[in-house]
Length: 287
Image 1 (cartoon, rainbow, N blue to C red):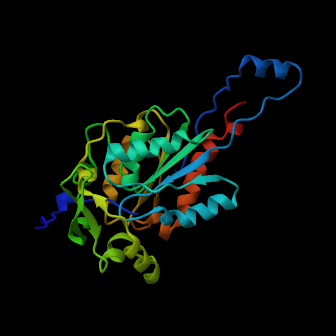
Image 2 (spheres, helix red, strand yellow):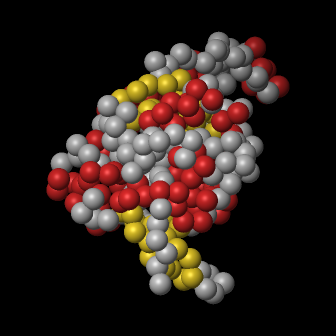
Image 3 (spheres, rainbow, N blue to C red):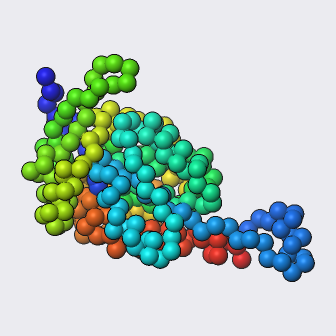
C-alpha cells in the first residue's frame, strides 16, 4: 500500500551581480622558480573544468543548453548522472568523479544537486568554486525537506506520487516522481510543451530518504559560492533560495525562471557559471 505524500514528504528537484574574488599570489616550486630565473615561464595551471550535477526529477540532459554554451567558449565540461538514492552515497559517487579530474574545478549543482556538491566538495582541494542553480545549500544537520519547510510556497508535495523500489539489502524503499500531467506547471513552467513532455517521461525518481537525510558536511563554508535564485520556482520557495544564498554569502543573481532554470534560461545560468570560472582562472590569480 502506497503511503500518502504530504507537503512535508517532498521537495526538490529539477531541475552575482558577482564580485570577483580577490587575487592571491601563486606559490611556485623550487624547479619552477629556477626556470623563471633562467627566463623560462613555468607551465600555467589548467583552466577549470566545469562539473554539472543535476537534481531530482531530471537527468544530465537538463544541462544541454548550458553545456553547448560552455563548450562553444572552449571550456571543459563534465555532467555525470546522479544516482538520487541518498545524500551521502550520492556525494561519495560525485567525489569519485571529482577525483578523476586533473586541475581546478568549478562545481555546479541544481536543486538536490546543491546538497550533493556541498557534501562532495568538502576537503576537495581542486574545487575552487561552488555554483548553486535554484539549489539546496544545507548546513550540517539540515535536510532538503528541512530547508523547504522554512518558507511557504512549495507545491511539489501536491504534484508528486510515490512508488516502491527494491533496496540492495532487501526490502523496499519509496521514491518520488512528479505526475506527468502536472510536470510542466510544477517543474518547467515556460518551457515549450513538447520539451516539457519529453522531460516528464525521462524524469529520474528520487528516493524519499535522500530528501530526508541530514547533511554532515558543508563545503560552502570554506569555498566561494555563486547562487541563481529562480523567482518562479514552485519546488523550492524563492524565499528559501534567497535565504540560503545570503547565509552562504554567495554572489547572487535573480532570474525570472522556473525550477528547471537550466532548461528554460540557459543563458543567464551559463553567465553565472562563467563568472565563477573567471574568478578562479589561473590568469586572474597568479600576478
